[in-house]
Image (cartoon, rainbow, N blue to C red):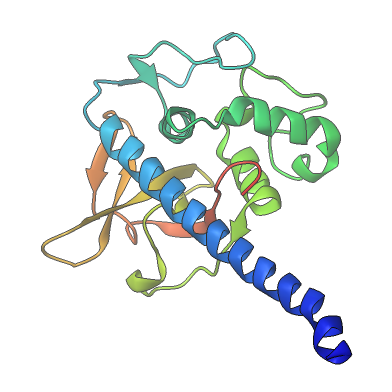
Length: 205
């Protein structure tokens, strides 16, 4: 009897841990569903590809709604589900600037107007604060909600979000991205060299 009573707290801890993990997985699944829906919704907006440096408010700042680049579609999709990448990236860069200084921008200080709009910065951030996943040539390894970065050639970076719609021809999940003609839903997963594969559920998940 004493042994049974002594074991109860341990069993309770195991049960609580299992419940916490299940709840966490459910929360991530729900978050992913909302993020994917937000990314698909972005394809209904007309956006001119304007890569200019623009002074914007902080936090919650955005370039004019009818302009933007590839990163802006990721930023807007996350903001639609309550995650402000402008704020999250800035705060992490302030605390860990050296981790971001390895890429070609060679900034000497943070800049809330542009830091979160640069693909290399987002790559560092997602690797640090999210999950960095294997880069493979297997389409089934890429799931809805995943963030993919590419090198378009000549070290020109690009980023997009995998969504839950599939190409009827290839069977691959489609990508929401903006490569110059506004946010599009396209089968481009393997069109360029993949340089990063990430999942990010926001702070706290």
